[in-house]
Amino acid sequence: MKPAVRIAYQSALSNATAHEAGGDLNAAFAELERAHILGQRHLLPHIVTHLRMLRIGWKRRDARELVGQVVRLIATVPGWLTGWVPKGNPGGANVSALKPVPLAPDLQALLADFVVWRDVARRVAVYGVAAALGLGTLAVMDRERAEEAAAIERDWQARRPQPLADFGTTRTLEVIPVVNFRARPGLKSEAGISYLVKTDTQTILFDLGFNRRDEPVSPLQHNLDALGIDRTRLDAVFLSHAHRDHLGGAGWERSRSFGFGPTQPPLGKTRAIAPVALTYPGSTVEVADRPTSLMPGVASTGPIARRLFIGRIDEQALVIHLEGRGLVVIVGCGHQTMPKLVQHIRENFDAPLIGLIGDVHYPYPEGRLWMVGIDVQRRLASGDGPWAPIGIDRIGAELQAFAGQLQFLALGSHDTSDEVLGLAERTFGDRFQRVVAGEPIRVIASTAGVPRP
Image 1: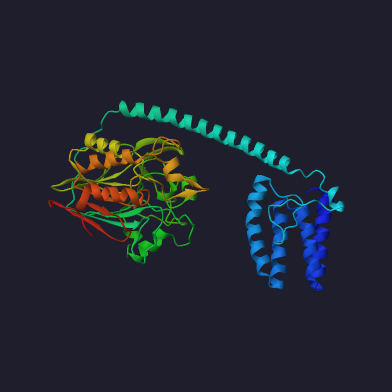
Image 2: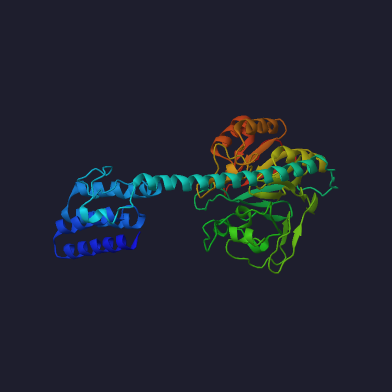
């Protein structure tokens, strides 16, 4: 706002305040109309004027004015963004909000440079340049993604299997979803995941949730307490990959670490196992950079690389060898892609894959996690970049392939949509189970059938 216009605007507001204090609401409103004409090109002055008019309308008990001012307040932002405001409009409900009005002689000189079409044209030019720069940046980033993705794919095609020697078996497997997008009453839910995995001899916490709101007591810790799970009695913390919704928060992702919400309590004798180098105070984080035996009946697939639009990610999965039946794989996000993960397990593990439990990146038609209006899971972390996110045809084909290979499938809804969960249920029938935080999944050795809580 030009200095002369600002002075006139502030003078009109001061006069309105004086008249209102003296009880002359008509004179106060007339000064606010003058302030509106002077300030309507500028967002904050425009909003202030309409708020003051709304107050006058309330004091008058004028329903028409109250409604009119609410409508005009809502319109201030789009008017400022587009640059289009009706020049000379006094802003009261007695005049159409879209009608230009000739200026009073004393305002003509102050607003001589106010040309509506010029303000609109300036904004169109600014938005056009910003859009071109934004699209150009996205195109460059996507080209970089495509190039690195092609290099990763070449490495995948040239891979040599690294078969894992016998790593033992377990007769029992219980997986308790601790954090997921759906939760039973009394537990907190969020777009993050954590599973408690229990075998004959081991207790493993798989991933640490998100704590997106930075709560002092994270959903993970709240649910651990509610489920009676003692963090100090864990044998291991297994991290599928280094994304914030698995490490316990955005801050831990940035610092290449992990936490139980906002804190990093001592791990003591609890092992920490990750697919890439991470740190944790007072502990050494083991890196499973290939298929690795971890404990009796438990192994890591080692990381499988993928280049997403948001960057490279190396994700590992947990493999449990169930005596007399085969392998159950527990998955964090499935960024590896499910066909590659299944193929990798077949090449490196000497037992059949019978089941999958966890979360798979199937955010169709949209994901659970949005940031600044962007569907992060679908546009930036699935498919082949923001212009080619994963589609339902590909998802359906993968589910059909799994149905012919797996004895059971249990999927969470952290990054799988309700529509895809319904499709999986129709594809697998009673061999499918929806993952809900707090509802255990149990699998027993040498027993056919689907795992049930």
